[in-house]
Image 1 (cartoon, rainbow, N blue to C red):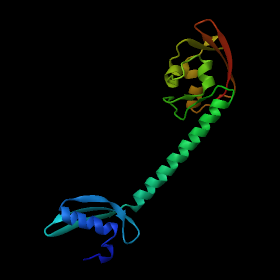
Image 2 (cartoon, rainbow, N blue to C red; image 1 turned 135 degrees about the horizontal axis):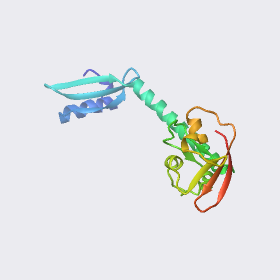
Image 3 (cartoon, one colour; image 1 turned 90 degrees about the vertical axis):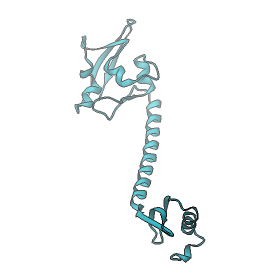
Image 4 (tube, rainbow, N blue to C red; image 1 turned 120 degrees about the horizontal axis):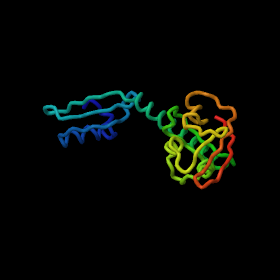
Length: 175
């Protein structure tokens, strides 16, 4: 009776279903004013009680978040493609504590690590190799990525990787 224009529209269907079933119905829909509303209809005497809450701003924020997440996924895929094609070992983190470190295939191969290794753990507690600088063993906290994580710039650092097998590799590191 109050919304005759909605008799055959979604809003009218929602109200008619709630009246005929005499049960609580919740959802979201577009209001007459062009805003998204969350609604809850419930039996109340011989009629219905209806509570509306404007959720347009929340829906807009959710859409923006979804778009940002999609842009981040695309950017991540682009970065991963670059990391896998360049002929240089790369380790990357945005976490100063190095709890999440990403490395490309060449970085993992360089250290002779399994492909699915947790690089954070492998770099903090290496197994199978030891890192030296000027012939002195270099603790993880003094290595380039760890220094960069603390905000330090490492322009060029020559390191020697000594593997348990006796093999050695010299690395020029920047961070």
